[in-house]
Image (cartoon, rainbow, N blue to C red):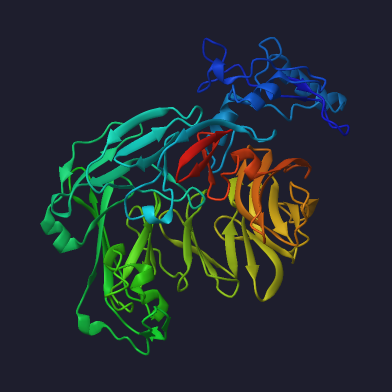
Length: 558
């Protein structure tokens, strides 16, 4: 479809190459996905926007008529040879749509304001060790998967229809899962435990909804290796403390009856983490995480949990428990936490060495891992995909919240003002720019999008660090001003960055901007999109679609 943007910009065509099925549609899209009319090219009334308000269609990037598609290469040549400004910067091929679906946080189209397209009501993320943290979900292929009461459900992101469901037994615990606003939720399969403690069994669920024959877990293995939890890559994880209790030295650590802990625990027992094949029970790998000197607060069982995350009773139990530990499990990483158990293990069983005490380890979207300290006073360790230390970066380094590019790392170092850029392997790229920046929102193509004081959003050239544009975001979508605005989540369609921002009052706004020009595409209070359900909602991109997830349901946005 041709469109003439305001402000004298190049005339733009949105096309999809003719890599389609027999119905003329790209792979993965149905003709019913399209707006009923493409609308006029002169900026007049658009049938698609009218339908969007009625939530009767599910829009995707516009597909050009067949007769127009052969003009794409001709128009591109004319734009270069004649210098007419006639550009195809809106071209979206089927391959590009497939690519954006693979981007963590990738959404097919963010150029227009979002509205609710469909709703699924029901409990989200009930049951399991992680459930107390909120609506726990997983991304299994192009499906959103979660436990709802006594079932494992999979939702189609385009329609909200249930793709499949699997009945679960007593005390279900399925994973790996995570909070929609947190780390990567992608997993190759979902492992589900069910049944009473002495009759526990496990099965593995594949993306098409097929489940393996349940395997009964031997209670002797629980006594030998620790309690079972769902693991990555079709595994069951077990963990427990090993060694003599005489190895524990509480030092000057002490906890009050109310749970306030001070001092340091000097020594304790190691943790052995074991992964077994969920279907066969055979050991995949085993790794020992040595005890580290730790603050007494990390040994508070009321916060860290008992052994392997079991919740202790705050009435009868002493909060100072040197064996207390738990873990957060994702498809890429097992992150142990608790008393002296500050260790991260890859899904292949590689213990990541050299991380600073209490460092947060994340799996990078471009491969590898990053161990960042709690602030700019602590260095960051960059790892390869197999757990090898590649480089140590000065200061607090992070990857962008959403990455559709090479995977730039930005670091804030206490000794040198400004932000510093590094390659994904830790090789320096450029130094000491934009001293008042504080969050890395997005990397889209050649632009790094950062938040800065003002409040402002700035676009930096990823190669040179030069400032490309500035967008003032002091005024919220409702017109109210704020002294500072922070990033909560970010998404991209390969051109726009969608930022979910909040201010000191807790107000949440959706802000979509063009990462090439820095122009504001649109902004709206998220409460207007979710009809008042915004405060407990988190957004997640699944299969190129944007979903809003709460403990009480899922909403499809588009």
